[in-house]
Image 1 (cartoon, rainbow, N blue to C red):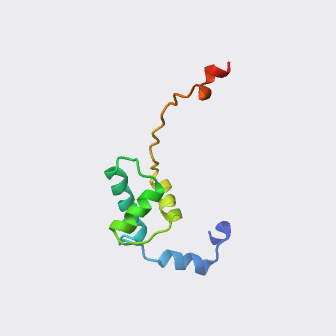
Image 2 (cartoon, rainbow, N blue to C red; image 1 turned 90 degrees about the vertical axis):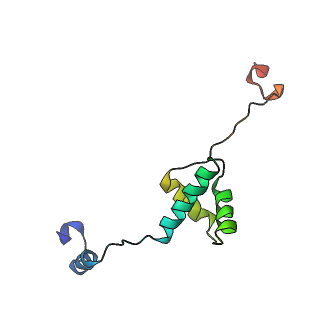
Image 3 (spheres, rainbow, N blue to C red; image 1 turned 135 degrees about the horizontal axis):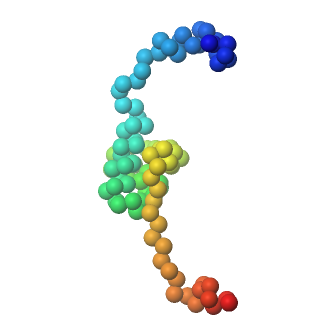
Length: 96
C-alpha cells in the first residue's frame, strides 16, 4: 500500500500511531470569536474590524490574513450596504 501511495513505510506507521487532537486549538477559539463578533454586529464588520475588535476586547493580536483565512473557512463574508446613487452622470440612461 505504501508503494501505491508513494509514502515510506516508516512515515506511514508514524502517522498511524500519531494521537488525534481532542482538545480545542487556538484556531478553534479564534473561529468561535470571529463568529461571535460577526453575529453580534449583524454581519456588518469585515476582516479588519473583527481583527481590531479581537485585539481591543480580548487583548490578543492576530494578523489580518489569519482572520481572513478563517473567515473563508467558516464561509462568512461582510454584507455590503450598496446605495443607489442619485447622480445623473452615473445613471446608465443618461449616456444612452
